[in-house]
Each structure stands twice: as C-alpha cells, then as structure tokens.
Length: 339
Image (cartoon, rainbow, N blue to C red; front, side):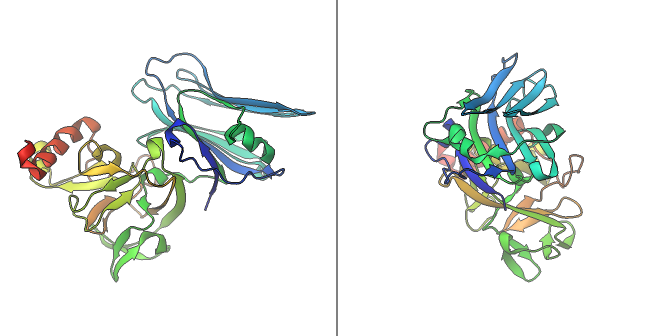
C-alpha cells in the first residue's frame, strides 16, 4: 500500500497529513498528486507549483498547465534535467481535475495523468528517465516554511511514496461489509478468487482488487450515506465516484426505469448523504470482476469499479442535473412537513 508522506493546501483546512520528512535520502518511487479547480474563464499557461533550491548545486521542479495545450513538467538536479509534456485540451465544463505525476527512477519510467473529478480520464503521457525527488526537498514543498508557491487553483497537493493506483475514487470504504455466499465479509478482508454475491450474476470471483488509503479532501472527499435511505442498515462511507443503486417510485416516475446508478458525490446535494470530513486519510478497497457488477454492501447496492474506459455500466448512470429532482422528491417523501 502506498504511503502518503504529506498533504497540504487550502482544502485540507488544517487537517493536512504531515508525516516526518524522509531525511537526506532520495524518493526514487513516488507520486505527486494535485486536486484542481480551474477558473472556467482561465486561458493561457499557469504555474501550478514551482520551487528551486540553490545550495552548491541547482535543483527544482515546476508544473505548468494550459487549458488549451496541456501540462508541462520540468525538473532539474545539478546537471541533470527531466521534462515531460502531456498534450490535451481541457473543456470549459471539465475544470475540476485531478493531476498525478508518478515516477519510478530505478525503472527509468514516469507518467502524467489528468482526469476529471468524476473520474473521466482526459489524457495520459509516459516519460523516460525521471529524476528521484531529494528527501530534503520535502520541506520546501510541504513544510511550515515551504518555499514552493501553489497556484490558487490547487485545492490540495499530496506526496506519496510509490504509485497511487487508479480507480480509488470509486472504491468502497475498507470497513464496508460485502455480501458473500457465506455471509457478510469486510471489504479489506476479501482476497483474490473469493466469491461475492452480485445482483445480476449470482456468486462471482474477485478478479482484481486494490487497497489504498487516500486523502479525504477536495474532489476526493468521501461520502457518508445515511441509513436507512439507501437500503443500508448502517451509515456507509465510500469514495465520491462510487456508483450507488437507487430504485423506487421516484426513479420509475422520473426515468421510466426500475433501477439507476448515481455517483455518491452527487447525493450530497440532498439530505440523505453528507461529506465525510472527519479523517484526513481514509482506507478504500476497489474490487473488480469480469464485468461490472452490482454488489450488496450492508444492504445497499453498489457498482464495482470499471476495469476500462469502455466498460458498459451495469445500469444507467444519471447525470448531475438528473439527480437534482430525484433528491428533491426523496427529501419531500422523507419530510412531508417541509414540502
């Protein structure tokens, strides 16, 4: 499991992760993670972060983003330099973003990835020959007297030792209980090959899984579904991009379907779910099967993480504007006196 070294930025509201600095060594495998909210009118290049140290030898790192051109990364350590560009155009309606730069210096490979807050991948770029991050530079990025300058669009920035796996934004809380043929089992105790009950195909074996603690800030703020409004017996914590199964008279009336899927982050617009902000790091487990399945998580239906961008969802997934009337009808049904 990837270890988070530090997290900082305005979205952390004083709850940032400040682990002990790595010291004088090198971080040869790591990930810099950025949660961004760009101005819809923003044009031209902006420096997301930049710092430089000059103590006998020059070193520094900078990341620039241009909504029309993409991302440009530059790094220097003495006479060694590294550059990686990610070419893409960011639509004006996709300005809540997550940017990650992952490197593995011993393997001489690195990658830039840019996705929306909803988990839609916009672009990736692979590079060769990255430079490790000096441990003594961590205070320049995250310390109380950090010299690195963050652009106002950066909601939070994190540094992890090792690669941060994809798909965690749509994962289950590690303590969630998933229904199996032998009863409910905590998600973080499942293993590859274990059978799990699904809504459409009965018992299915787990084909892949990822466990990871993730910072609970900005677009990655977890969601707490309040029992019993989603069929759950207790409150459930899940990642914001997880798809929750919804059914009932309101669903049939509005959409003409028995069941639909709604991303958990969209459910906080009503009173049936709230952002989970009590912990800076939250453990998640992502489960994958041969196809996307709907699992029974403590009585609530939750779709598994898609294994690729072209995977067909197990049910129709609602858009944000469609969720608004659905939650309004649910709220009125829950509290008729307020109608």
